[in-house]
Length: 293
Image (cartoon, rainbow, N blue to C red):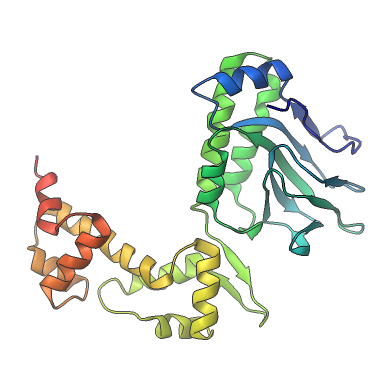
């Protein structure tokens, strides 16, 4: 494992923070079963980072950047991307990149370099987007602040094991944060808003054309954008929400399986049972039997 972490030499102000896990602790973490999957190598907070700029040709670790305010840019194999407040950047190991603060409105950002045997699995969970707009999320800001609290704990392995779990929790939480896409038409597709429409129709049917029309998009662009933001087809997510509600109704134990299907807009109980089995992995009657003990 490479023990060098390449961070910028941006001059740190009094209210900024830059903290690097020592080589000794990195070696211990890489061998520690409770931390080896994913652990922080370096982390920091740069407020209004005027003049901040970095370029890496062959990065040896993964990098997560969260822009809290201001603006910046990212150059990668996808070309130049503009970065603003509420944007999340995920820069994988081995992929060349350069980034920097906007000259007029420099960004304020949190960042963490990380590595470990399970990092690729976490990245797959987060999906393919290199730049994701999630908005300014108070919970995420608190998670970063908690992780940065590591610099006050001394160089003790248990604190770094705990920080590894904080980082893993932070990464997994990103996979369920609502995402938004700014479309060329000037409109915004908000996954939370789409799923709110889905939940309002759990008791009836809703097809792709109807969903797309709600957000004034073509069927093709709606489905493509939704999948890019979530990694799932919209109708599959709608069915998953329906089956989750079916599980709740079955857990309550007051309705027959046929009635549960009818509550969700399925007049054919056999079709409902087949769909439930496909999503949940067992028949509705078997699911209910599991929860009678």
